[in-house]
Length: 360
Ligand SMILES: [Zn+2]
View 1 (tube, protein in one colour):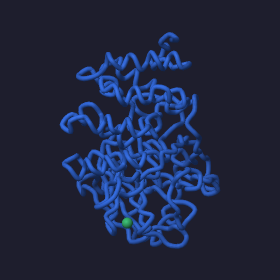
View 2 (tube, rainbow, N blue to C red):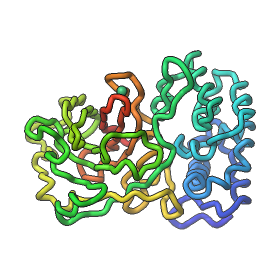
View 3 (tube, rainbow, N blue to C red):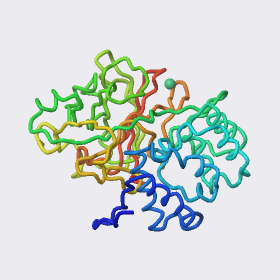
């Protein structure tokens, strides 16, 4: 395999021989060593495979899923596992189902089944939850288990890297396909009464394959004045402007005189807070580190893919479905707040929920 790069990032697999070595090395990182340097390096390499050459993993998919000591050391993010393990044959599911249930979490059987994503695998996930499995763990990864029937993906497995470009003027922002920093009146039907104080990103849904049908062309990721740990749910009018906003947040999070109060940071006056986003497919130009791509210069998040898998995903307040994850970006997209901002939709009830979580 090639030498370790000087910046400390994991070496990149260059061919099938490298992947065979990576799979063999899973023996060394299973169990309590899962957070070792070697484990992280392998996870970064598998993340690169998922992003750039998922076909190289295909010859090893069944090996990892049936030799449990390998699966136990297999540690890329759930999003990456969804790419690498997708569509594995049903005999792999039979093998996973033979594992005693009290060992599923340790070995990673639950995530593996969800990542395989075939009808048989999603039936197995639903069976697991209805027989004592951890519903919350699946839901943090965007897997919904309805009252009956198989588990459902509430995300598209097709991912796009979100690159941020600065904009000099509001005119430039307004004309962009994916603007960052729109004025509140452009995204709220009642700007004088809305709790929306901050526009992070507007996304053109057609640019992310696999999203549900949606009545408007674009959807907005917005936030209230709170810095972190908030949730904002809204309906929208025919122009896509939000109304009936409901915010759940910690009231102590900011004060009237807080210097970080966004009311003092009028977007129109702060050119460095304006921009536009560009969506690009995952490729070799991205930096695959620590389970995400956000160390790539210019990247601020991912559109598509499952939610990050640490925090609870929102549930639709009308129908009870787990909401469909659309995009997550880090707060640096507008230099306000702290952590990640995510956008979810319920395509049945036509509602949106934006939320803010910590880093991990
Ligand atoms: Zn709903």
